[in-house]
Every structure is written in C-alpha cells, then in structure tokens.
Length: 388
Ligand code: TRH
Image 1 (cartoon, rainbow, N blue to C red):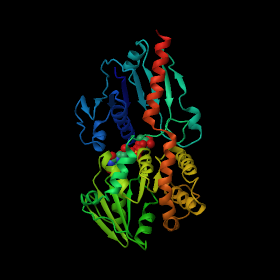
Image 2: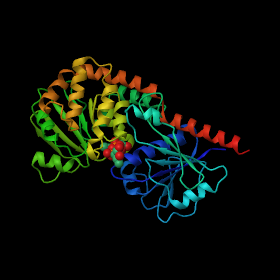
Image 3: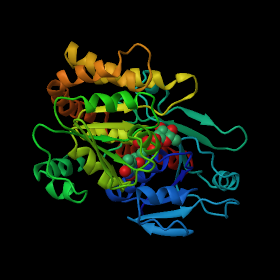
Image 4: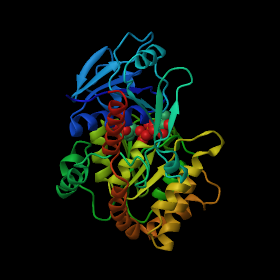
C-alpha cells in the first residue's frame, strides 16, 4: 500500500512557501508514488504559480496531488502516516489531537528553511517532543552539503534543462515577442524585492557597452521600475529602451515556465529560497537577494552561501560575485553598483563556466525528496518494531 502524507502550508507572504510545498508534493507523487494531501490556507497565491488550481475548491486533484483548502475551524480528518509541517506553520489543534490518538502516531516532520550556514547540519533530523501530547516532531533541514536534507530537484531536471538549451529556445522567446538573443546581447531575468540598489543597477545596464535585455515578471518590483522609467504604469507586455538597456515586463509565469526563463537567460537575479535554488540548477550565473529579516540576519545566509559558491572560483571572479551579491543585499562592505557591474562583466566568462561546475557539485548534497522519504520510511519502520 502507498504511504500516505499530509503536507501543511501556510502562505506567509510571497510565493516561496507554497512554491516549495508544491514542488515537494509533486515530487513525492511523481517520483515516489506516495499518496499526498496538500493543505494550503491561500489558494489564490497558489493559483499564481500554478494556474490550474481552483481557488474556491475545498478539495481538488492536481498533478496527482489532493489539494485541500486549509480552513478554520479544521474539519475532523484522519491524519496520514507522515505529517509534514512546512516552515513551522503550526498544525491545527484538532489535527494534533487526532495524530496523538493514533497508534503508532504519524511521523511528524517540520521542513525548515534552506540555509548554507554551518549550524544546519548539526540541527538536521533533531527530535522535539510535544510538551503535552505523546508526539515527537523532527526537524528536517535542507542544505548544501551531504550531511543535511539536501536540495529540491526533480530526478530528470538536468536532462530537461539540457534538452531545452539544445533546442536554442526560439519558440520560448517568440511567446514574449522577442527574437533569439544576439550573441553579444546579455539576457537577464530580474525577480527581486524592492531594492535601493535597483536604480544604480539599471543605470549600469544603460551605460553598458553591449546590449542588455532585462525581463521582469510582474510583481513587487514594478512600482520601483515605473518610478525609474518615469511612467505611471508598467503592465505586462510593455517594452522600454534606455541606452543599451531594453526592459520587458513579462506576465507572472507558472512555476515550470519560470524554470524555462531561468534556463534561457544568461544571468538571473533571484530572491528568497526556491528561485535561488532553481537558478543554481539552471547552471547559469545568478545574483541572489535573500528574504530580508529583522536585524539583517539574512546577511549571514548570503555570506554563508557565498563561501560555498565562490570556493572554486579564482580570486578575481570570486571577488566580483561576492561584491555584486553583497551590494544587492545592502551589505556595507561592497563597492558601488557601477563598479560591481563592471567587475562582474570583466569576469563574466569565468563566472559562466563556474555555474555549470557548481551545478555538478550541488548534486553531492542529495535530493531532498529522496532524503525526506528515506527519513520518514525509517521512522515508520522503527515505530512498527516498537509497536508490534
Ligand atoms: O516569493 P519569494 O520571495 O518567497 C519567500 C521566500 O521563500 C522566503 O524564504 C520565505 O520566507 C518567504 O517567501 C515567506 O521567493 P522564492 O522562494 O524564490 O519563491 C518564488 C516562487 O515563485 C518560486 O517557486 C518560483 C515561483 N515563480 C513563478 O512560479 N513564476 C514567476 O514568474 C516567478 C518570478 C516566480
């Protein structure tokens, strides 16, 4: 019989929580044949990254996953064998009680946020008993090294990307009214939070000696871009030119089409967590903007990933990558954006080459879905033996 899983996702803001939960749910069904129920408290946000989702349905089947609206009060439901709480979203009290009434109780896992910081490996897999109920939650930490929970990636991701790149993607560009890029042209995708460094970056692209085409999916950056362009609105489909820069606003894409954009561009500005990992798997250079946290805690995350990412780069290229990432995240040590961009351009070839090698190294961390399934199946076996 197929092992059953319940995944709970509370959409805090943005798309990362549901983006990761959805990717994970699809992977568990497609690659491991599990029966997965995904509980989501905001189906409207879900629909943005996956348009087939009906935001009004209490229950629907999508890509083999049973998607349920997570509403309060939570209706009585029999818990699955494995219950995964995405990012400490706090399970409904009634559901916890139902879990504790089962014998043996479900395997309870909290999926944590991704970080390259060294403490992650020490915390991965640790148990935490519930203060009242006979339940134990386990912390599962994704990460960049083999001693962590690894990274989300489909088993066939590299092949799908290679096939897309081999096809040279003219059809992909045509859907946005764009030609295949000129060899001299730099196509950049830009997905970011509001950022004080943005105007200087755009100015640097305007002044570039070679053409830069920037593709921006609709979202939080649009008002800031409209200000910089001095236009009152900036709907999807608009194109603006300033010096060497051509700026295109794209519609917000579904999660798979966004992957194609990352594969098709020569440089990707990404943010948060999921797009950052996808840009790394794209084997293209990236600039990451971490999700801003109180007290600039996110700077540690940026610097920790930089340590890994630049380890095998030569000094000048490592400096160029570090400077532009740090400047983009507001970390004070970095130079001004014009200088960062000039240095990045000077090292572009080395950085491009490194992006492919980095992808090979990432595989050593292991695939999160495989590791999560192993973790849960081992716990299930232990319970069967201790509850004959
Ligand atoms: O949207 P985000 O800023 O999400 C954030 C982070 O995950 C952060 O860690 C978390 O704490 C916070 O939410 C609450 O960035 P992220 O993680 O890259 O997620 C974006 C998702 O949206 C990802 O799955 C890719 C998807 N996406 C599309 O499907 N279409 C698009 O056009 C774009 C730009 C993104």
